[in-house]
Image 1 (cartoon, rainbow, N blue to C red):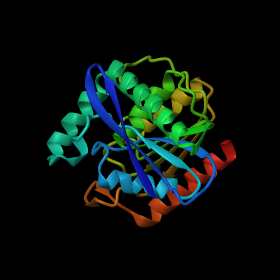
Image 2: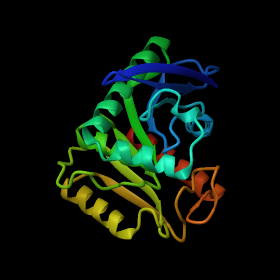
Image 3: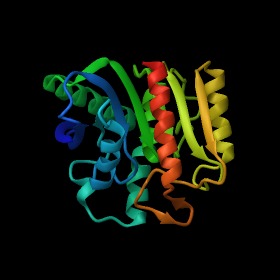
Length: 241
C-alpha cells in the first residue's frame, strides 16, 4: 500500500492529509474521502484507511487538527478539546473539509489513480459529524457513510440540509456518546430533506466498534461488527457508483 502526504493551508495554518491506495493495482479507482476520528491522521487511522481502500478504492484522508497533530501524545481531555474546537466552529469545519478535499483530489489526480467522478465519503465518530456538515453544504458526494457518528445533528440548529447523495449511518443501539434521541433527530432531518437514507443499528453495540485501539467500557472495538460495517459500506457504494 502507498501512503502519500498532501499539505494544504487554511487560514494560514498548515495541515497535512494523506492519500492511501494499493500501488500494485493498475487503473483508476473511485475516491473515498475520509474524515478520521478525533485522533486525526495517525498510524491507527491510516490503518483504517488501508483496510477501507483495499484494491478497489483510493482513500483521501482529511486533516482537521493541523500538521503533526496525530503524532502528538494526547490525553482523552486533549482529544475532546481538539474535537470540540473543530465541531463548534462550523465555518472552519466547512473551510478545512473543503480545502482538504480539493488538495487531496488534485494530488491524487496527478498520480493518475482516481476517477474523480466516482466520489463518496466516510467518517468515523467525530469525523462522521464533520463529513455530514460538509455534505449539508451541497458537497458533491455520491454517497456518505458514517460509522458510530459522534455528532450527527447540525451544530447550528436549522442548518439547511442540501445533501446531494445517499446516506448510510452504521450505529450501535447502546451507544452512550450518541444516544437514540440524537439519531432520531438525524433520521427526521434526512426524511424532511428527502434524502435517500438508511440507518443500520447494531443491537447492543456501543461506541467505536470500528476502532481497534479501544477495548473496554462505552467505547469498544468489535471485530465482527467492524467487518460487517465495511461489508455494508462496500455494498452501499457498489449500488451507488
